[in-house]
Length: 309
Ligand code: BDR
Ligand code: CA
Image (cartoon, protein in one colour):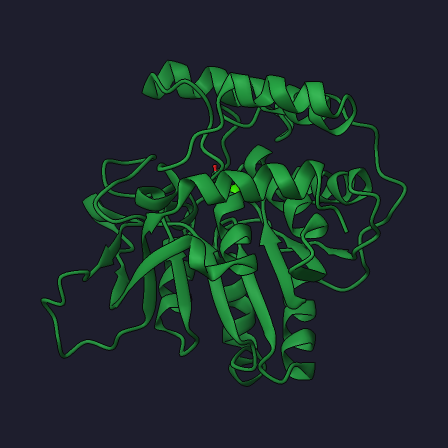
């Protein structure tokens, strides 16, 4: 299996993504690092530990940065509930957070890596940027970054910016300027797949424990998508990054330059040159364009309820 480290801010769609990564036969999750994002760092860390326990695993969890590099602290409970798990009470995990920080873990793992470890990012890029600033050499030993964030011509927190990159645009800029191959799975890609209330009902029917849990934590999310976007279900944004790590053929990409705007009207926008207008600029990203949604959905359902390792 492919070795991966997951950096995340659970977050309901992060929770589903983490479960998929742990259950997927294609992936070997070495560690999970947390960051401020959907909720504050205490909650994202606690939630990551709870999800690891839910998966019956004991993958180590490392606590990361509690605020963005330069921008003021921002975390939102609208979509993810006040506790980041749809407001559902989940018992505290028996596992403790690891004693070293997320950034130290990322660096340590990078140092020991020989280009075989993939970084999957599901939240703001603060931890990755700090690790790059501290030890670029160690960080350049990763194989690649598969990042859920950004978008081509579409936003969800401003007309042009996606939440993860908007929360910490300076961090996103550092990561995109760093010399590691990036696959960017933005809103234009993730919005091609919706998990409907019916899908969650099915999950309940096939697995009264895990399915029921997933249905419950996604209820706030379903309401929020309906209220804000008149969408009948939730978009499993973060799961796409995990699915693509497991099976890169799920998405067609364009290899091009991506730059991140940090301030003003376009704060957090991922400007993706998919038309190759700026030939002289360095191509730094494989930008997700077309998702094979049917196979992505199969990946989700089979991994959760049938193909467990
Ligand atoms: C991203 O922002 C968060 O709300 C989700 O967890 C996902 O990572 C989507 O814009
Ligand atoms: Ca997330």
